[in-house]
Amino acid sequence: MSDLQARANRLLGYSTGSAAALTAAARMDGRIAAVVSLGGRTDLAGLVVLAGISAPTLCIVGEGDPQAMPLNTEAFSHLQCSKQLTVIPGATHLFE
Image 1 (cartoon, rainbow, N blue to C red):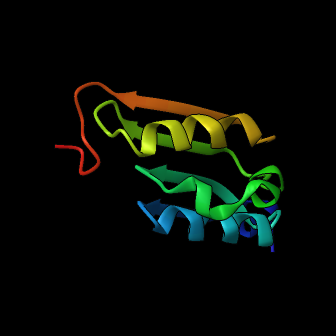
Image 2 (cartoon, helix red, strand yellow):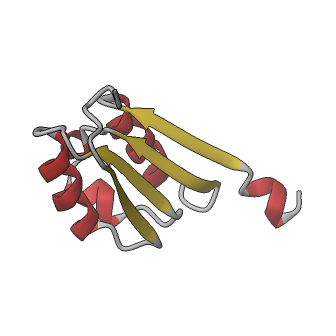
């Protein structure tokens, strides 16, 4: 299997599902090409899991989501991988 095939898996988690995607990425180290957390409860993954993710990670959060905004900002500071935090202006938790 080529390196490209081995890293073809991508994970997407929304809300509480973000913790599951982040946890899977940490456990499947080297087999995940990218992770996207959309309005995620990244706190549920835990700091050890966040620090253990090697796949590039994108956290997307709505500017008008008072719960997810601080959680994603905190999680972002613990990620050791290539990472990006994108804030969607005016969006809520459901990105409305």
